[in-house]
Figure 1 (cartoon, rainbow, N blue to C red):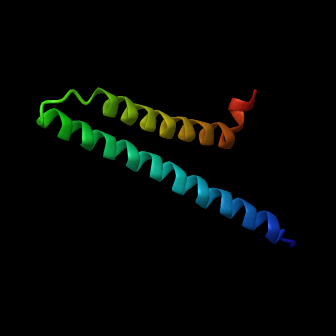
Figure 2: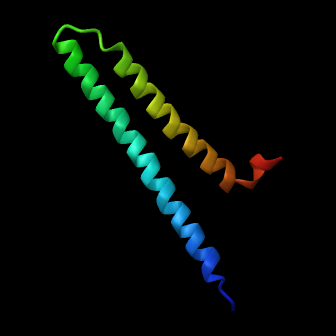
Amino acid sequence: MNLDWNAFGEVAGVSVGATVAVVTVFVLGVLALSQRETARESGRGGGSALTAAGLCFLACAAAVVYGLYLIIPGFHG
């Protein structure tokens, strides 16, 4: 059995990088929701923070859907 260590390392690196990126974007979304809550308590609207949180969560959902598209062969047509 031959193992292509370069390909293995590449897949591992991309997987770790993608995981860190998705988690970071999710944390930014939670932070934006927290800032919205703080803004509303102080009497400001907080609409831009809600928009930022929504975009962050939408980006996370898009990454998950794309990952499922890559994994499930039935989606490739």
